[in-house]
Amino acid sequence: MSKLGLLKNNCRLVILEDIVDSEDEPDLVNSLEINTKLSPSKEKPDSCTECNSYDITGVVVMGSIEGIIFWECDDCEEIILRYPQKVTEKYLQLAKGLWTNPSDWGYVPRKNFN
Image 1: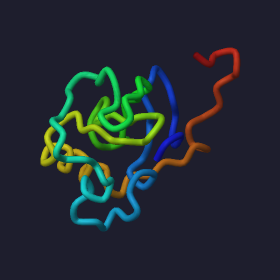
Image 2: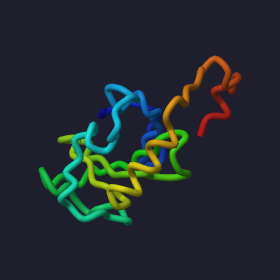
Image 3: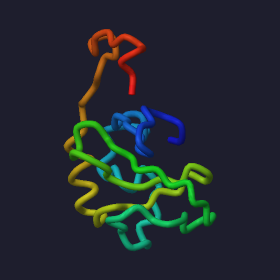
Image 4: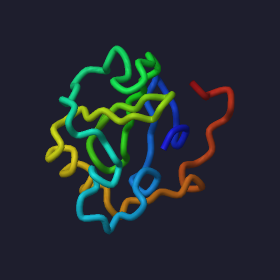
């Protein structure tokens, strides 16, 4: 999943199909191969639990909830839940079937980019 989506303010914006093989999976959290034995971390972790890297990014999944749904290490791609597994699953299920077309976003002049 690393480097997919839009990176802004240390967050990555993705759609569900960017991070799961199939939206038909009954358990989307397990399809992400998240280490569910780790306690969820509401706040951004100081370092990765797998490789100790400090490069942690919040992942926003369009259509799930407003804001970060889980954390990802930019080095080893370890995923750390922000919410309990059942809550995360419920939020990811909301994003099923969502799609977007960048051509529909309209034109923004380069001088207006953040």
